[in-house]
Length: 473
Image (cartoon, rainbow, N blue to C red; front, side, top):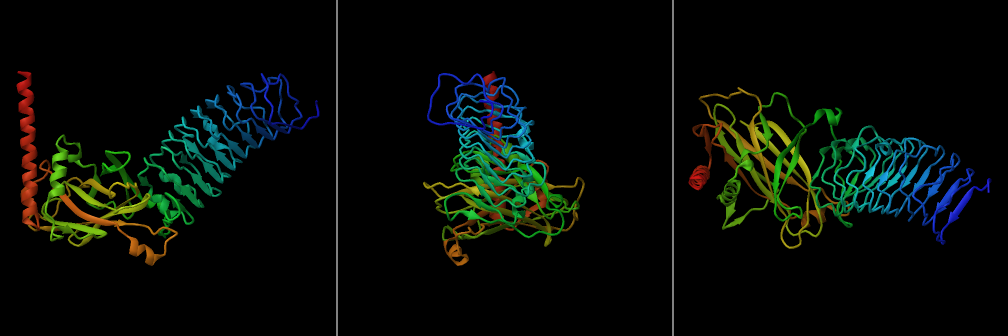
């Protein structure tokens, strides 16, 4: 049938695939296609729609002869383990790989198809990486829902002003790239059930139409913030993995490192955030427990004053000391994940040295309240930078939690139901690299307790070394 243009087979089962197909085909729609490849004699230069759902297809060779093809559907092809190069399919508009449960690799060329409008790979449970990078100027919808092994979102290399929806529900995604800023008109980013995702990049605040969806209706957030005329990516700095969340209530458990973003940082600032040294200390848990148990001035008859803001002050001379900041904050009882921002300012003698922020997700836990313990280090940024040797300098560290208002809430209703808080802020002064005599706290009892904690850790280390030496003997 040399002139056949449309071949659709829906409710028939064959013992094997065809030996020949007419080159005149425009549409090939064959469910339960019983062959690992198309016939070698088939030259589909006129083919526009290729649908082989629930087939035996394996595609071992690059797809090269499909000059006119604009739609591919390989849904539920369980034998498909790898999608080869599609660089020869430049006209492709729609690509569906839904529920290819054994698919483990997609060729990098899929990230550079200029005419691709929709890309769907729902339920590909073995897929860990879509592609490393994408530059898909025509793409409107990207659906990766249910890709439970998917860990990373691809880097966005160029401006993609057609993208409207990204579905990452119930994926194993762990982070989103800063380059998401290139999806300038993105409208919906669905993150329901992304239990491993804790941080959102600060660049997400520049997308004017974006709604971040973390659950059912009532947990849709608009995070857009007006910025200065300068390019956001050029005026921001990122320190990777310097903030640590300690929260055993999270489904991921343990500790997670977050990136910190500096939005108004001057190169002349003398303070910077770093990974806390005590976090690497073998007796960190002892220090951590004592920091939590320290008395705090905002105690009223044994209860904490819940506020969105907390601060701690101390005096220093010579240089800014190397310290560890420990903060506790979060939400009360919540029924779904919530987006919130942790912001920190450091003031020295009343002048702001820098401000930083992290935007991330509080994971719901119906069995207990959701509380995050955030830990980071602060130290002198410029080597040799000193303050007055004789005069004392006053340092104030202000920590604040901000919760964007969900789109389905009125402002008054949200204020009434708001249960976010900053419970306390603590500072631990490291003995190494500091002169304890050059540091004073306003609250003498806290200063005394912190010094006792340092002494207890030193004693514990000596005992540990002594026991080790005895075992060797």
